[in-house]
Length: 101
Image (cartoon, rainbow, N blue to C red; front, side):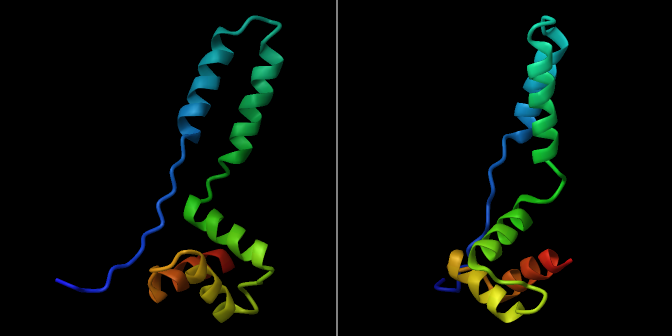
C-alpha cells in the first residue's frame, strides 16, 4: 500500500496538430500567404526532428547544467533526478545513456 512511487516524465506535444494545420493552410493559401506559410511549415519540420521529447528534455537539462554525459555520467544522472524528483535511478540512467548516444 505504501510502496515507492516513481515520477514519470510526461511531455505534451501538439506539434503534430500544428504541423497538420499549417499544411492544410498551405494547401488553401493565396499566393500572398504562401511564402510565409511555407516558412512556418519548414520551421515546424525542423522543430520536430524526430528526437523523442523526453530525450530532448534530458539534453536541455544537461546543457543548462553544463554537464557532458559522455564524460560525467554520474553527475548527469544526478542532475536529471534533481530536476525530476521521484525519477528512479534506472530511468535516469536510461535517459542519460540515450542522450550519450
